[in-house]
Length: 510
Image 1 (tube, rainbow, N blue to C red):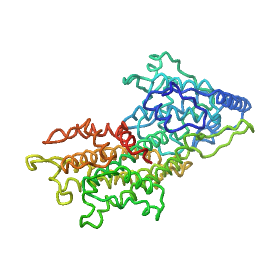
Image 2 (image 1 turned 180 degrees about the vertical axis):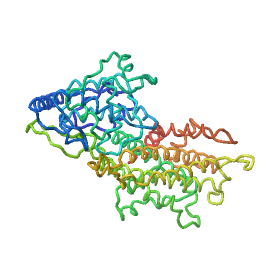
Image 3 (image 1 turned 60 degrees about the vertical axis):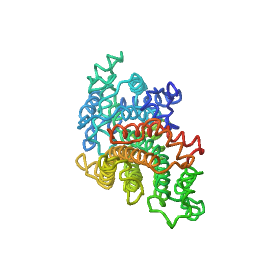
Image 4 (image 1 turned 135 degrees about the horizontal axis):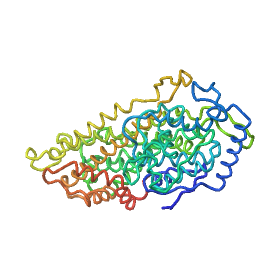
């Protein structure tokens, strides 16, 4: 892992962002970025002195953009915009999201289109590297103009206002800076609007949700493969010829994964001459369902990569031609649609997983002891685990309703179409977390089923996954505190150790 990741304004990757957000890796501004930043700032200073009319720099904001601000008041304007726009409500965002916001904002500024002073951008980097986490309320952004409300809360700490966390302790922004021996900023002309007018709240949430969703994908294929074996299914539906006849990329990948995971399964071989013609959809169509979600994630990944390395403020400074242009790159519609699509796609992985869980715990469908436990009646086994999965799937169905189809005009109808991308991203993160729990429950149930089913050897990948699960979670002989088992299973899922063990055995999953 790198000590610091150098930001250039382009080529910023999801894996690097996750290291910054979750592993406390620091950031550094590249040399070429510093040159671009200084050139743009020199132009802003010149235009302000010449009395140029520039939105948000020498004018008011939104519906107040027709109001001209005097040269003497341009500095006052910068603090006022932060204070007035910091109107967020609700619980505060988690640390990883706020750290991602800061890193993404600095990378945006590194492109040299913001007009901020280098000192201001370096101050934001310093705050991030020092471990100061501004308190950013979850609610208040409509996703255009950018994420004004959460970004204002973030930026307040730079000027010694607002609140922040240091080592998990909540304190004033001024105290947080003092604790880390950082001096507060006095903002210059145009810096208030440049700090808050961007999409970094949405994209931070979207990036982390996508990262976690991609981690779930392989686990979903592993869980489905384990369930297939426990339920005495067939591998025939994973035959490459079937998927070549309908060559969706994700479908082909998922089928290939499940074919390799179940390879050399004595369980499947033991019933190849049974009377069952074909399996239920949740087993037979797993590649089609999982694969469609994989393809959706590919689309979201493309949007995220573009947004991570874009200039999203307004106005934009173009130092090569010495021009400033007002536009709408702050509008979150691309992210709103992508997060809604991601929400729907990840919900489907939970949906089909819960139906496999039902087949595992239902003795009429599995041929196993009811609720996967011996001495049923005295023991309830995994009965309530399926309840929990059902509740999470139902919650996902409500949350997956697209936020991007709604718009409520703001700012006296100047901002008359907004994306609602911030809510799309927030609920997407919740859906991903719910889906992690559902897949964790399926893995627990499938491992329990393998123990109950037979002493016959499972497939290579299935057995590798089973061994990792049993290294952390024991077989359930009688009822015990099930919530703790689910939590252990979720931590295993997040660690990636199950996927690693399977890939070490059968090769890299797609």
